[in-house]
Image (cartoon, rainbow, N blue to C red; front, side, top):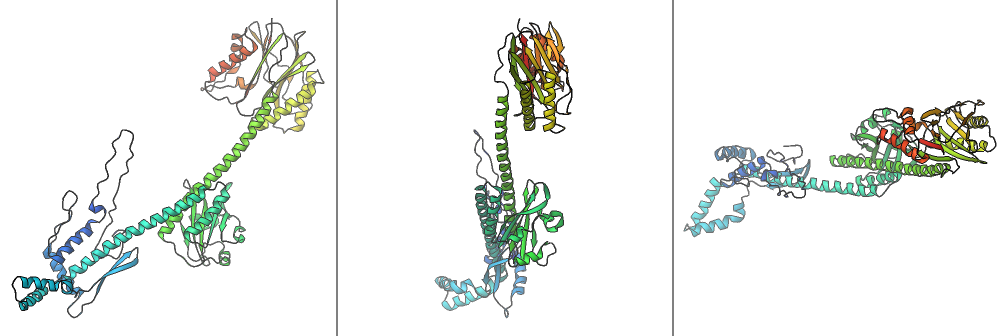
Length: 599
C-alpha cells in the first residue's frame, strides 16, 4: 500500500495514478487524439485480481478481467487453492457456536468514514430468494416436501462461502475508500485553488507594499482560521534583520519588539530556509524568543514559514492560535503556496516603488537637462570675419561639458570647459563655473585676472575633489588678435597652411588651490586660419579594439576640411569619430567649437 492510498483495507493495493500528456498545437499541426484510458489507471491490478478471485469464490463462476483490446490483465483464479484457503479462513473467522457480525472499515487518511457490516449466518437466499427457489423446484415436478429437503441440503453443502464473502467485503470497502480518498483530495485541491485565487485577487488589487502586507495578514487569518497573523520582512540594508511589518489581531507591543537577528533564533533560521516550523506550545518551547509576550497575547501554538522569492528568503509568516492546534499536510501546503505568492507580490511592490522613484528622478533629470541646454548658446553669432559653429554631444542626460559665447562691446569672448564627473553634480558645477566666468568677464579684460577670480570662487564653494578645466579667449575682429588663457584644458588646435599649432598658455585647473597665478597668451590670426576648441571626449573616444581616436586623427580630420565652413568642419570630425568607434556609446561628453577666419 502506498503512502497516498486509503488505509484500513483488507487486501494490499498500490496507487497507479493516470498520466495525461498535454500537447501544444501549432498552426498546421494535426490536433492530437484524446489520450486512451485504461482500467488500471483508475483501479490497481491487485484490487482487480482480488475482485475476480472473490467473485469466483462466492459465486462458483469463473471470471476474468480484460483490457480495452480484450487481453486478460488478471491471472486465472486458482479455485482449488482459493477454496482450501477460504476453508481455513472460514474456521478462523467463526465456528458454529461463535458466529458474529463482521465489519470492514472505510477509512481515508486515518479517519473512519464508515463501514460495511456482514452477518455470516444471514443468507441472501434465505432472506429473499428461498420462496422463489422452492417454487422453481416444485415447477420441475419435485414434491413440496422433497423440495424443502433439497434446498436445505443445497444450503448445507453449497451455501455461501463465508471467508470469500468477508474478503469480498473488504475489497468493496477498499474500493469505496479509494473513491472517497480521490473525492477528499479533489475537494482539498478545489479549496486550495479557491483560497489561492482569492489571495491573488486581494494582493493584485494593491500596489503599495504596506497595503499588500496588511491585506495579506487579514486574508491569511481568514483562510487559515487563525487567531492572529504576523509578517516580518528582512531589512534591505541588512538581510539578517527581520522586522515586524504587518500584524493582525495582535497588540502594538508585538510591533514594538523591533527587529530580530536571524542568527539569534533557531526557529527563524530554519524558517528562512523555506521549511515550515511548528511550535505546539509557545510558553515552553525554547525556540520561542519572547514566551512571556506570547502568553500575554493569549497565544498557544504557532506555525512559521519563510517568504521566499527566487529561492531567497525575504521574510516570514507567523500564524498563531489561542488553543493547542496541529496543522494538517493540506494546511502546510496551502500556507507554503501563499508564502510563495506573497513573496512575488512583495518583490513586485518593491520594484514598482523603485520604478516610481526612478521616474521622478528621471523627470527631474529631464528638467535639469533642459535647463542645462538653455545655458548653451542657441545659435552662434555672426561676427565677420569670423565663421563660428559649435556642437555639444552629451554621453548622459546631464554632463559637465560646456561652451559659451560672450559679447563684449565689439569683441567676442568664447569659452569652453569640462568639469570633473558626470550627471547632476557635474552639471551643477558646470553652471557655477559658467556663472562665475560671465560675472567677471563683463568687468575685466585681463584674462589672467578673470581666470584667477573664477578659480578662487570655485575653491570657495566646492570640495577638494571638485574642479574644472577651462579655456577662455577674446577675439578682436578689427585686428584679428586673440587674447586667451588656458586653465588646464586640452589646448585648442589651429590649422594654418596645413600645419597644426596649439594654444596652451595659461596655468593649472580651476577649483584646486586658491590665489593661483595665470598667464594670458596673445595670438594674431590671419585669414584662412581654422581654430578648433574641444573637450577630452573627442580625444578619448574608443573603438572596439580599445584604441583612442587621439590627437593625430584630429589633425588629419582638420586637414581634410581646410576649406570647409565651421559647421561642415564639425560634421566631418564627428563623422570620422563615428567611423572609428562604430555604434559604441561614448563614455564622455564631447564638445566642439570651430572658428574660421574668412579670407
